[in-house]
Length: 135
Length: 416
Image (tube, rainbow over all chains, first blue to last red; front, top):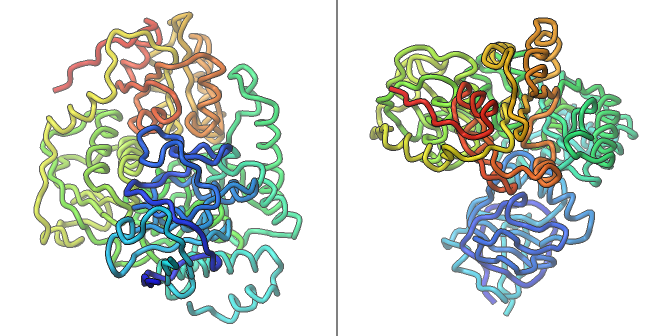
């Protein structure tokens, strides 16, 4: 069990399995939001399902429109369980607040995409600014 | 976060469920960005194209309206997903139109002004120096911050709505002096000439700045640009760099001198003719057939409407090419009264009001009409639409019109 400190975030306490890449994240351009998979061919996670996963990525991209998208995804029940970034952007953080999706960023020990590996089981506690690797 | 007694009461539900939701939303966002309190704002502007809000977002807005939500400050809307007077011919569906009608109905009930524009800083009520506002649409935010000296973060639809319902927004980012100081210094050696040159310069600087938290300061601009030029400059910079603020020394209000924004302590990066040419080369297509020519992103001012009308009057758009012009519902009646809409439409083009091409289901429109090759004078739009299945190309306004008439991309004018 290893604990990672990060900045205080948004959303509920959740547990799940990590899906990690060093790429960025755009809800608008990287995802097939109906199928629940990464769809942009250039993305490292192309073809992989994000449904129920804890995504660990570098930063969020995309314009103001993406603030609605996490909420829209959640209404159809196909969302990541949480998203961890090195640096979130303001728009996606606003989107997480509307959707009540767990989101944290700014990890004290450095690049979160190298601190966590795909398949790690995680517990995310946004209010405490804490992520625990359970296995 | 510190809340006033009035804000505590709102959080306790004493002003209704919609205000309670709004304060709760702002606490969540503010906590993530270390806001110490909420700051009163004078206006809000909301991006709410149904394409991104979806059924769930529209239902959410209907619920707020149902709960008696009412805005506390003037609140405007960004362009809509359809022009209700002209959507079937574009291949847009009744379902898209219905989502738009429901949105407009819910927002109107909350007292939101359905302005449907991304050029409110030119046409409605430009904010003033030091004015805290909560604006959506990156182009609106960057112009208001930089040219007007107002203070706004990029507010997504939900956060803008929370600001409108309460007259407040979390005090973080661009509301604070420390985030408005220059972080990167650029020296321009080639003076931009015309809207597209300004867009390309904005794109180059935005790409080099590259983050929401970078503030470019630009030296070397010889004469005060026009509002439309700064509109294209800012929209492109925000699109390529997620950048919400720039300073131009001697021109924008917070940078009378380089030192005033701390730029004297930064090392200078030259923007060369080669940098500008490299950016343009991503969007070249000389000689190729063009399916659709688009003037939008941002919506056209009355002055731009006149310019397009002057270029096209009495001529004929090629039979295999479409020409679309997007303007605001405020400009449209003037442009009609002055004959510009007739000039464009008699030549075979179409003027849309209250939409902006890229956020009106552009992917579906492209598929429905078989459009691939798109030409525009907007650096912002060519940046975005590659992600929507188009092959976008960039040219100056006069070359875009000439290409629409020819049906293929005419060689761009060589500029000094």
